[in-house]
Length: 323
Ligand code: NAP
Ligand code: GDD
Image (cartoon, rainbow, N blue to C red):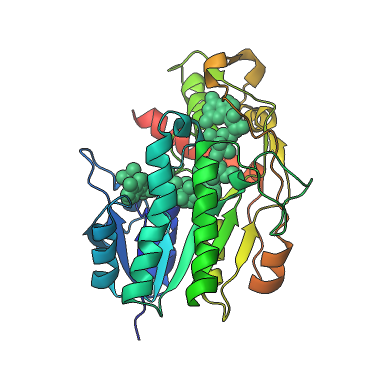
C-alpha cells in the first residue's frame, strides 16, 4: 500500500531533500506551505519534484490549518520541519520564533493525537539546544543550555514531543540534528554566504566578504545524508531521540579556507570582520556524538566537509556565472 507523508517546511532545504527521498521510496507526499507573496518552491524545482507534491495551505501558527492538513493528508508519517530557522533572526523576532518553532509543534501533535493517533511523527530538533555546551561531545544525555530565542523555542518543541510520546503513547521521535548544509542552503547561513561570496569574488562580481565570529566551531554535515536519518527514525518499532552529526568540528575560518582555496583564492585577502554579524550570545562550539544513531538506525554520514563545501562551491560558481 502507498504510504502517505505530510512534510511541514517542505519548501526549505531539508524539505526538498526529504520530499525527493520519500517520493523515490514510493510515498504520496503532502506539503504544508505557508502563503508567501513571492515564489517559495524553487528548491523543489531544483530537486525536480515540484509537480509531484500535494500542496496544502497552512501556517504553523494557525492551529486550524495544521489540523486541516493532518485530516486531509491522512498521513502515516509527519515530518515537522517548518521553522523560523535562522538563529540570528530569532533575537529580532523572538515571539514569532516562539510561536512557530515552539507552540506550532503542539498544534501538530494535538492534531495527530485527536485525529490520527497511529501517525508517526518526526520533530526537527537541533544542536542549538546544547548551546553553552555541558559536555565536550554532545549526545542524547547531554544537558541542554540554549543560547538564543530560537534554541529556547526548539527546546520547547523537543520536550513537548517527548511529553506527547510519554503521555499519549504517540510514535513521536525527535532528531537532534547538528548543522547540515547543501547547495540548497539559505544564503543567510554562513556556509552558503561564504560559498556564494567566494564564487562572486572569483568572477569579479564582489570585492569582499563581511563575517562575524569566524572562530565559532560547528559540526557540519550534508543535508542529503541527514534526511535519511529522519526517515530511519520513523521506521523503528520504538520512537526515541537521536543525535545526528558527523563527530568532527571545524571553525568558520577553516571552512572559509576550504571554499576560497577551491577556486584558487586566499580567504585572508577578502574576509573582513564586521561586528554587525556577531550575536548577542554565541554558541562557540558544537560537536556531536552520533553513536546511538549508528548503533540503532545503522546511520552514518557519507559526506565529509571538504566534499560538501566543494559541492556547494561548484554549484555557486555555475549559478553566479549565469547571472
Ligand atoms: P529552512 O530552509 O529555513 O526551511 C524552513 C521551512 O519552514 C521553510 O519551508 C519555511 O517556509 C517553513 N516555515 C517557516 N515559517 C513557517 C510557518 N509559520 N508556517 C509554515 N511553514 C513555515 O530550514 P532547514 O535548514 O530546511 O531546516 C529544517 C528544520 O530543521 C527546521 O525546523 C530547522 O530549525 C531544523 N534544523 C535545521 C538544521 C540545519 O542545520 N539545517 C539543524 C538542526 C535543525 P518558507 O520557505 O515559505 O519560508
Ligand atoms: N549566518 C552567519 N553569518 N553566521 C556567521 C557569520 C555570518 O556572517 N559570521 C560568523 N558566523 C557564525 C555564527 O555566529 C555561528 O557561530 C556560525 O557561524 C554558524 O552560523 P549559521 O550558519 O547561521 O548557523 P547556526 O549554527 O547559527 O544555526 C544553524 O544550525 C543549527 C543547528 O546547530 C541553523 O540551521 C539552525 O536552524 C540549526 O538549528
